[in-house]
Image (tube, rainbow, N blue to C red):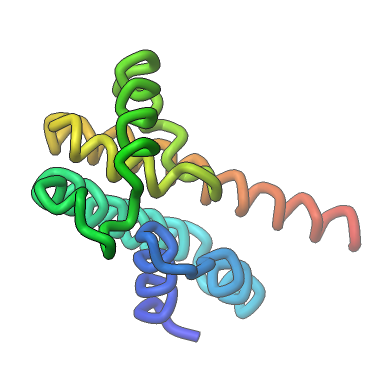
Length: 144
């Protein structure tokens, strides 16, 4: 297992593609890789993957009437209303497995400042991976 594989799996997991980074993440911890380095690579990859969704939302909404567009117009408008209600702070929850990808896409549609988007998204994703490390370490202590 390498940092490149972890980065790519974390990046893919943040896009609309069906990837999961937790397996590579925990596997690297199991192999004795430095937890901080694993955390940093996964957080960076996952945050940059979310940035792809932001870019897609920002620049591809003119194609929302096309069949291949990933979100139906009704759900897109519902999501926009939800985002307006809860605001940019909801980006701290972009790590959620259900709805997180859509949230980052909608942030692009809503033209959230990219710098703010990236900071809030990275904080949420970084906390998520930190919790995984804590759970992993706690599990090891319980088993030992």
